[in-house]
Image 1 (cartoon, rainbow, N blue to C red):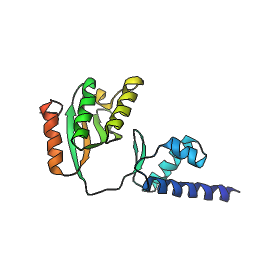
Image 2: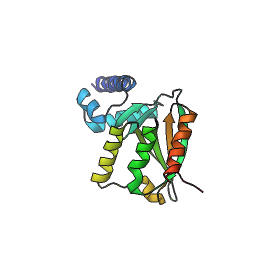
Image 3: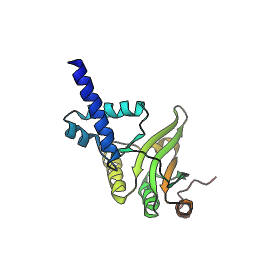
Image 4: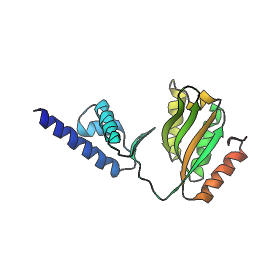
Length: 175
């Protein structure tokens, strides 16, 4: 009987991997319903897949299979107030960028990374709703607003345009 359950677990993980490869984003709740298991079981399945080297990223809206593509990847350093967060995110997205993550350098823990995967105005609305309506603090609140973002966009020129726009509205960190 134990072998039967183990085979079911392995098959479910393979199916989850296929689901991730065939969708842009999928939540643990949706996967839990699909496979008739708990959300926590899915979280565990994803953790095991990641441990085996699968490039699965957790975003604010679910999981995605992170295939490296030909799009340009750049890193920016920003500093702003919590109230300017929406402006920062909208500036990046409106210029064609996707905010892959947020990174802060913490004096106790070192580098702390939070996956975001924000690519649309709806993603921004969802993120800001959770930030404003929950008892949550932005990672940048740990570092007086200083934080980094990995940005994905079409090319280096688009990335430069994003940086210039953020500098123009005083959100890009300046030495």
